[in-house]
Amino acid sequence: MYKNLLSRLKTNHLESLHREEVKYPTVIKNILTTLEEKEFISELTISEVIDIINHCDCPIDDYNYIWEMFNDK
Image (cartoon, rainbow, N blue to C red; front, top):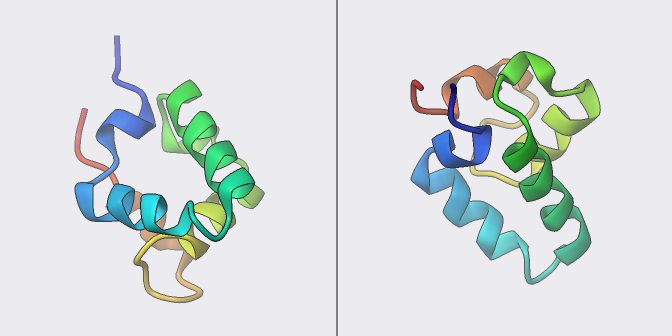
Protein backbone atom coordinates (compact mmCIF):
# COMPACT_ATOMS: atom_id res chain seq x y z
CA MET A 1 0.00 0.00 0.00
CA TYR A 2 1.19 3.50 -0.82
CA LYS A 3 1.41 6.39 1.60
CA ASN A 4 -1.03 9.21 1.07
CA LEU A 5 0.10 12.42 -0.60
CA LEU A 6 0.03 14.39 2.63
CA SER A 7 2.58 12.10 4.24
CA ARG A 8 4.79 12.36 1.15
CA LEU A 9 4.56 16.15 0.76
CA LYS A 10 7.99 17.71 1.21
CA THR A 11 8.45 19.52 4.51
CA ASN A 12 8.94 23.00 3.07
CA HIS A 13 5.60 22.77 1.24
CA LEU A 14 3.77 21.46 4.29
CA GLU A 15 5.18 24.33 6.36
CA SER A 16 4.05 26.76 3.69
CA LEU A 17 0.52 25.38 3.84
CA HIS A 18 0.46 25.78 7.61
CA ARG A 19 1.58 29.41 7.29
CA GLU A 20 -1.21 30.04 4.77
CA GLU A 21 -3.73 28.42 7.10
CA VAL A 22 -4.01 31.63 9.12
CA LYS A 23 -5.22 33.62 6.10
CA TYR A 24 -7.14 30.87 4.28
CA PRO A 25 -8.31 28.30 6.84
CA THR A 26 -11.04 26.71 4.72
CA VAL A 27 -8.96 26.40 1.56
CA ILE A 28 -5.99 24.93 3.41
CA LYS A 29 -8.21 22.50 5.30
CA ASN A 30 -9.61 21.31 1.96
CA ILE A 31 -6.11 20.93 0.51
CA LEU A 32 -4.90 18.94 3.52
CA THR A 33 -7.98 16.71 3.39
CA THR A 34 -7.49 16.09 -0.32
CA LEU A 35 -3.82 15.20 0.18
CA GLU A 36 -4.73 12.88 3.02
CA GLU A 37 -7.35 11.05 0.95
CA LYS A 38 -5.30 10.52 -2.20
CA GLU A 39 -2.27 8.35 -2.87
CA PHE A 40 -1.27 9.40 -6.37
CA ILE A 41 -0.67 12.77 -7.99
CA SER A 42 -2.68 11.60 -10.98
CA GLU A 43 -5.77 11.43 -8.75
CA LEU A 44 -5.70 15.20 -8.22
CA THR A 45 -7.99 17.38 -10.28
CA ILE A 46 -6.63 20.42 -12.11
CA SER A 47 -8.41 22.62 -9.61
CA GLU A 48 -6.74 20.83 -6.69
CA VAL A 49 -3.31 21.14 -8.31
CA ILE A 50 -3.85 24.87 -8.81
CA ASP A 51 -4.87 25.32 -5.16
CA ILE A 52 -1.85 23.36 -3.92
CA ILE A 53 0.59 25.26 -6.14
CA ASN A 54 -0.92 28.62 -5.21
CA HIS A 55 -0.58 28.01 -1.48
CA CYS A 56 2.88 26.46 -1.37
CA ASP A 57 6.33 27.86 -2.01
CA CYS A 58 6.32 27.02 -5.71
CA PRO A 59 7.32 28.68 -8.94
CA ILE A 60 4.38 30.79 -10.06
CA ASP A 61 2.27 29.37 -12.89
CA ASP A 62 4.32 26.21 -13.15
CA TYR A 63 1.71 23.56 -12.54
CA ASN A 64 4.09 20.81 -13.63
CA TYR A 65 5.97 21.52 -10.42
CA ILE A 66 3.39 19.34 -8.65
CA TRP A 67 5.55 16.36 -9.66
CA GLU A 68 8.49 17.76 -7.66
CA MET A 69 6.56 18.46 -4.45
CA PHE A 70 6.43 14.93 -3.07
CA ASN A 71 8.95 12.45 -1.78
CA ASP A 72 8.95 9.02 -3.36
CA LYS A 73 6.71 6.41 -1.81
